Amino acid sequence: MLARLNPLLMLIVLVTTTVIAESESSDGFNASRLSRIDGAINREIAAGKIAGAVALVSKDGEIAYHKAFGYADIASQTSMKIDAIFRIASMTKAITSVGAMILYERGHFQLNDPISKFLPGFKNPEVVIDFNEAGEVIETRPAAREISISDLLTHSSGISYKFMPQPLQRSYQLGGVIDGLTAGDVELKEGIDRLAEQPLLFDPGDQFAYGLNTDVLGYLVEVISGKSLDQFFQDEIFEPLGMNDTYFYLPMDKAKRLVTLYAEVDGLQVSDGTEADIELDNPRYPIEGARKYFSGGAGLSSTAYDYFRFLEMLRADGHLDGVRVISRKSVELMRTAKVGFDWFPGASFGLGFAIIEDLGTRGEIGSVGSYSWGGAFNTAFWVDPSERLVGIFMAQVRPYTSDISYRFQTAVYQALE
Image 1 (cartoon, rainbow, N blue to C red):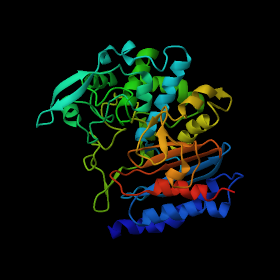
Image 2: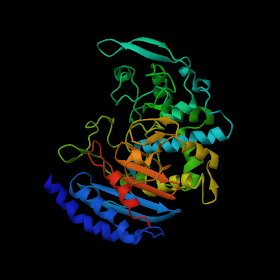
Image 3: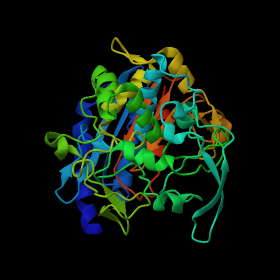
Image 4: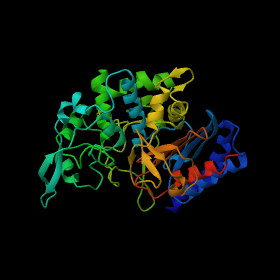
């Protein structure tokens, strides 16, 4: 392991000093205190927790900090660059949620409409009651009501993930439910049809349970728009916002910019796709494979700058550089707390992300009303409307024990003037 880390240690100073010239400055931060981010990320690389990272901070729409650290690939000693492409996994969810709101604003549905209006396979859902010793469902009952579009946005539908320990895990496995990432020859419709055959964990709207809700939402977007999800995103979000490096499956001329996926198992090892709870058919996703499954909950890859463009649009109430993607009122609704959940103290869930409601209960530096989410491979973002702030951290490892994305957020806040 030490032999692997020595090149990382040598690269730390090189990357930190050479990338500063690429960063922009902005009012509102103490520059010397903002540089504490460098130390926090460099220590994580030196400890062998991550191979490298890209971090970006903006205030009032101006980039104040944008740096790359460590390696994109250790074996080849390819240094991380600020235009590196990362698998953003569940950071896809915020984009899909905005896609649904675009169709909502065009009058295709109300958020409280049942999804069976467009996806008839979900009509008359059942809730699981009992299982046999093998974990197979043996008894269900009719749900109190149908799943609404709002339930999908808030993860309160009763749908879960196969990889998460939960009572329906065995049923999902037997039913061939896809967790959202696959290199297999499967299209989104087939995956959602399999999910529609499964019972729910609870009555829709009763509670929060993280799951394939946003994949279903992505398929809903396909059905209503008449476009594949990748084409809808390209037409309605990526092209208008100038997000030129965000894809479900990378074009081959950009494949070399994809950061290697690592697993923290006896040190950092190149992932073979089987070390974590989320199994990949092929750790070379999203380069290799059938390239057909457009997962609205987990499938995108992007750069820190591209994702900043998307988040800055949200921070600016739905518009950026003269382009309006969604309305101010829709953004207001999305960042309004709706469903309680126990993942983050002092937070609730809105339409696509977590929202801080009680800073005292949260117990960490931040702001009430800020909203955030992350991805399975150690990527994370947050938007703080009151401080007019956006923060993005991207690394590429799972499983991992690092909490650097949270410490990055602390380092940003302590630098505010």
